[in-house]
Length: 418
Image (tube, rainbow, N blue to C red):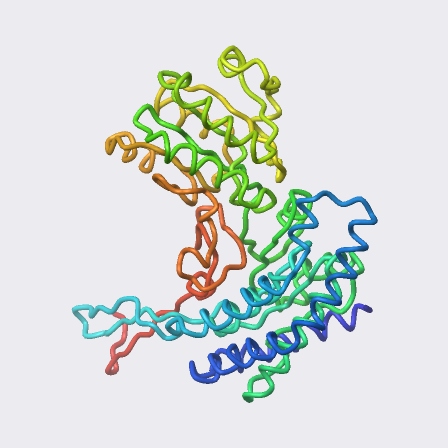
């Protein structure tokens, strides 16, 4: 694409954003439901395209976790269709009065939600992001520019075309969803440059190198997470059955998602009781275990964890394990090594749970539940674009409510300021 093409992309997005911001809830929801129907009808074609891309990635030697993120099947396509319908069923986030107040001079104030505008989403190896991002952006009255990775280019392109037709079918601008029609890496630079000031927000969804580049080069604000280095802590008050179930699911349900646990922490006081059944379940599921000195003293079959392991998001069936001194030790370990994403405590001790939930500074903290619930659909958001781990604007799953801002409307009766 030439520079003029990128400028046109931005202009069309800005024009579409103005129209989408004025769209009624009925129009937006009709578009999303039409897209769900079109997606189901096109499932065989989409799976055929996706199978070619998965085969090519496999031939290129990509890791199993990467292939899992790239691969679609009938169930995953149906999940995307349901996500479209779930987002359509959510309340319209635009035009909500957040607060109102009146000053002594008679001025009446209202703080009202409005769309952000033009959102650029840059992602890798996850074709479902095409659908989720478009659905959430449109529901919140925005326009979205999608730049999918080369490895899922054709799949994402096909999905975007379905979404554009659905928008046009209900009278909304199809340019409210634009897919960057090139796999050239220069496209990322053009988007990060702001497309002539058209881009209001950039959301990266991918590996560390992509996120680092977006943070370094973006001229618009960014929203996303750097690493999904998630922890499970088995407290002294943990129920043994829950400890096994939560640990196993957190690590092994899907190892390539950002909510997968990468480090297991166990209260030293119950290490000898909790570790053997937990380890047995993990080994049976095919998980490689790396432990500290205390864990290896109890279980010599565990390989030695290095300092680097505590910093590593494996996205693979590998788990680091450390013994800690109670809930305070777990909090300290997470503060030192965590990425601010998702952490879980397993305990029947209410005081320990309360301290963990209060003091762990991560976007999502759970009690007696798997870290793999770090997902917008599981939060009731219908879908998500990603998990935000920053502290401004949004934190946790980014759904429709995270893609609106607000303006203040002031009504007077001729007041002037003295």
